[in-house]
Image (tube, rainbow, N blue to C red):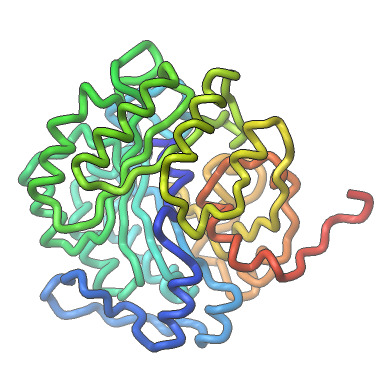
Length: 346
């Protein structure tokens, strides 16, 4: 599944969310929602708390199993059962109680979950501001795309590692062109495609970007990271990244330019608000700072409180200076002006 997982705030602007919150138009987007009656919405924190501490984005693992075995990925297995749908729905209701704005269903490979459409409908009924999913795209068919349309999916994100398959990845343009064309022809939700630098010859990323833009999809460029979320690129990869990124339109969540600092070997510190503005909920129902820190810190989602959101908002994360995970950085960017005390002696 990754590296799309560290880009899930693409076009998902905290600034836009907060502005629309003040106008009272939350959960009223023009994208059609399921016609069934909404489930009872749990009581959420008041709007002032939400604006200060609630998650802009939660990524929730619905299945750890994946149909692929990408050489750089540490977020899948080949044997796990899907998380039961009623368990996931309990987690979604809890996330709503915490005031979560946007939800992204991830894995593993979420299209392997037999109740994916039901989960999307539940997200829409709970009135999350944005319901999205991350997929490698290999299992997409016109019938599944139409099912996702009917369920009310609002955004799909895919990452493409290059043009031709190699020993590291099969997630390449030559294997996905037909699926992308099906998305163009059938999808009524937004599609965002990320070209990845680091798993294939770097010049292939330009070809990926060109193809997906011709199809009318949003296009981005991402960097492969290691299992700790740190940069893992050659000098040729870095040069290709700089050449491509200068040609793409800049989006507000990326204005910080942190990637250019990292690719030049310089730190790019930020006040990471993971555990508050961004949550990663694993298949066991535990909140983690992100997918790469599952062994560092976690807490059961069902025991998570508003006080935990506030505490983690101010909690200093020592991995911040060289972090490449855009989901954490984008969700934290809006609050960069707010305090976050560093540990003594740091």
